[in-house]
Amino acid sequence: MFIERDGAGKIKGIYGQPQPGYAEEELPDDHPEVLAYLNPPKNYAQLRREAYVAAGVTMEAIAEALIEHAGGKSQKLQQLMELRDTVRAEIPKP
Image (cartoon, rainbow, N blue to C red):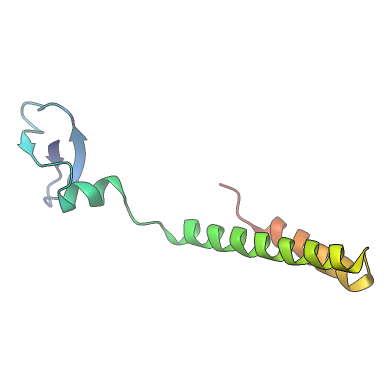
């Protein structure tokens, strides 16, 4: 991998071939800096969305199990389903 760096020395580009004048430094594919550049940490919005999705899936599974066990939709189960729909509506769209 041939690395292009910014003014602060951070990787700003990775190339398969050297790029004369700006990406001539070579690092192995498994170098920590290369791995960090290729796999950046998730931001807060991504983590929050994933948490909402996981919570919604869990809530839906619980509600469906309760409905199956009860043999129908009681008032409490109906409230759970409405809560599930509310949570789904709050999930940030990508």
